[in-house]
Length: 235
Image 1 (cartoon, rainbow, N blue to C red):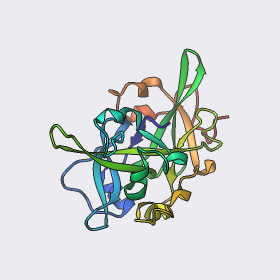
Image 2: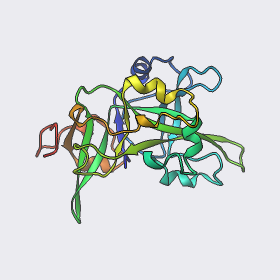
Image 3: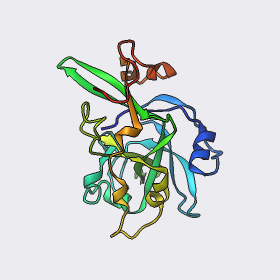
């Protein structure tokens, strides 16, 4: 599961990294504690032009057929292995794939029944990267208002992530951006992209417990904890 992430990059940096135009209708500020149910930037193909665009969607997918938006609390992540068969995600997999820009994410390792250690995880080169996602558009029958939402796709952990969680976000290499976003035959979807990222290209380090409070949002959240330096591996 991935329930928090951070994004140091602003709108200009995201646009440059994903080779797309700057949106003029919304602002994107860095955030060091991105939480579910907040509006965040995603990269998708414009439905009319087919060009890449940056859009602001709410984290927690609400499928188009849902009776209400409360399902979003249980759909912040989607398992790669069951996307094609899940009623919640299978239509989005066919037509509404996206990329979520981030600079890193957080996970919690259970120490004992009462405590957990928070870790920050990123790429060793510290570059902005993308996690595979799906998006959907839902309309509130009572108000007629449309709501666009997204989910992050997870897969089996690599050796770096395995000691503290049984899932990890699907990090998409830049070379696969186009394949993941582009329209495809429903029988030949680019699901081979949904694999664990090489552990040797990632780093994880202990950080403080302040990430647990969504009201905290500052660069201090990713500072290495005093009891442990930045590590390439956990053990």
